[in-house]
Image 1: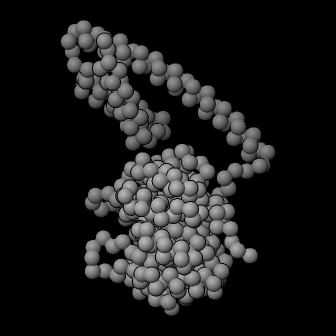
Image 2: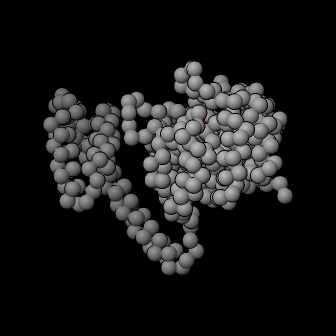
Length: 353
Ligand code: PEP
Ligand code: MN
């Protein structure tokens, strides 16, 4: 029976795995058969054209790898996914019956490229996954979804692979979790998949990032794997062997998006009501606080005094952070909360007539 790809990508706990790049027919066959054998992989990923940061490195096997991929699909029954960056890639990949196409992070960042891909996809009914753009720009990611939807592509998924940042951090690409969380809020029906491989850039942190995404209700994972990562031509530090992939998947505590257990539902409902009541109180206190800020703005204006009073702001921040410590609140959180209040308070004082 032919797999229904559109249903498959919506599956809870979807697993996409496979090599960063197709290198040889043998490498692809061996990796794919091992993955099939695990019984844990839903889709085989494989890079055919590789966007490399610097020239002079392996740039992918190119179109001839698509024929190998089709052959592997027929032999293993695994649906296939390939990265596309141009209209020609789309045409080639589709002509070799690739099941899923994905737009890479260095392509989703460029509206010209996304538009070119969208036009090549017009009228094809293809399933397309969109990686987040390399820079932390929510609107650009949304724009890519819109470009595809405008040409009638409705089977779409999102892949969170982290964002470029300057200088070294513990990640290859900073996850900035609030961006994918916001995407999930805006597009609740579009599956969200985490690619811990490109977030981490190394193997030892894959589990914690994968687990975090599952805790955040992502629909699945895309993980780079190679039968022997030590000889991989691309991303060898982050690819996992098949056995490492199985261990990783077995170590994850998979979550349900909900539960029908009566006690759970009752407790959740009760706690949510308490949260709603507190949120309501916080809102009305905030409103009172801003009214006072406005009055302060008026008297500052009447007395020709600057809106910003650095010493006062410093005192507020320090004393709030100190008090917060005794209340078991995180310093960073309280600092950004107070900063948000202060910015709004300054805005209100500046609009005093
Ligand atoms: C990849 O998946 O191998 C890849 C190139 O990823 P990204 O677009 O996330 O850099
Ligand atoms: Mn890669």
